[in-house]
Amino acid sequence: MALPFIAGLWFVATSAQTRRSYRYAWAVVAAALLLIGFIALNVLIHQLGWRPLDRAAHVLLYLVIGAAFTRALRLPVLWGGLSLSAIALGSVCLIQRYGQGIERAYGLSGGPASSIEFATLLLGLALVALARLLDKRTGNAERVLHITAMAFGMYGALLTQSRGPLLAFAPAFVLLVLLHVRRSGRWRVGLLFIVGACLGAALAMSTMRDEITERFAAIAPEVTTFDEHHAARGAVGERLEMWVTAARAVAEHPLAGIGIGEFNHYVDGEIAAGRSNRAIGRYNQPHNEYIEAAATGGIPGLLVLLAAFLVPLGYFARHVRDLDEAVLMPARAGLAVVILYMLCALTDSVFYRVTPQSFYFFVVLGMALLIARLRSTPDAGN
Image 1 (cartoon, one colour):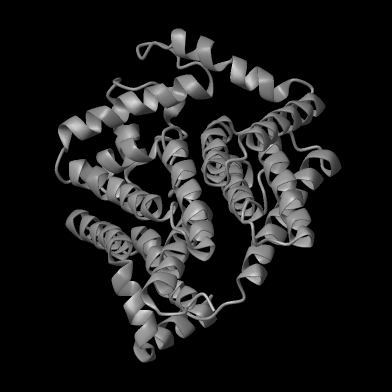
Image 2: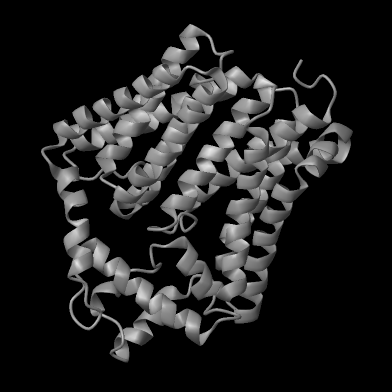
């Protein structure tokens, strides 16, 4: 990781083209810097020590690494590398499920608790592969690679049995297809593509002995039977209990919050006082990025998080109608990943673990600066 970071610093210091690209994508860069600064300020106010700055350090890392996207890159190699990563990581899920008998695949690190974050990563890679697949400049051999990557990414995510990322993936997937058919006018092909993907997902789910369908079917009963004064039933009920507890933290500390990474300590106090159910004592984040931001950073923390999502979303949305295919593809990829994370954030803390946070800022900052290079530098597409 040090090599691309040092290279990024060198590009910023020596290349006028790189600095011009950062200025063009200033809003996305500013949103990342705002998040870094806010985390540092929150840690300083609450005197939390160095450890909570790990998240901010990783955002800074990818803010500098993003400078590589302002240089002349062999982009098919980049897209191919990401798709090969999806195939490799999807294979890990297959090995864990069918080779090791693990009920919920969880990837290479973090243990069983990282299933949701690993699913988010796999589905993000699948969306990038789809964006490249829909690029009319993509050759047939490369299309086979990206189709394979999508299959491994989506099936691997299915093997994690993580409901939130799977539900968030569907609208991002459909949006990419609709953006493509709107531009190409091939509505029938787009509809067949979506139907084919649905049939493929149904076939994949049929190989799982109803486990994933049972998990989806359990959502409604757990919501309707939730009672914060009694036992929280299942993962959904426990989430609701955590959200109620986090809402009290927001009401008590609306400006400064309780401190980055301090949710578990607050929960322990609420359980001891009898205001929260003991079932949530094993969690150290409330499984909702928006609520966590408001609880740990107050209302300002929520606004900073929204900026980290909405500013890139607006930037990519402005470029998805660009006439240049070279700009169109990274704009679609960035837009889809932001939507995936925004929706996943409703039921999980997508920036709690380093891997999904790093993937988000690698893609968002990288695609934003790639677009900036193409738009701010004459003949950059050549």
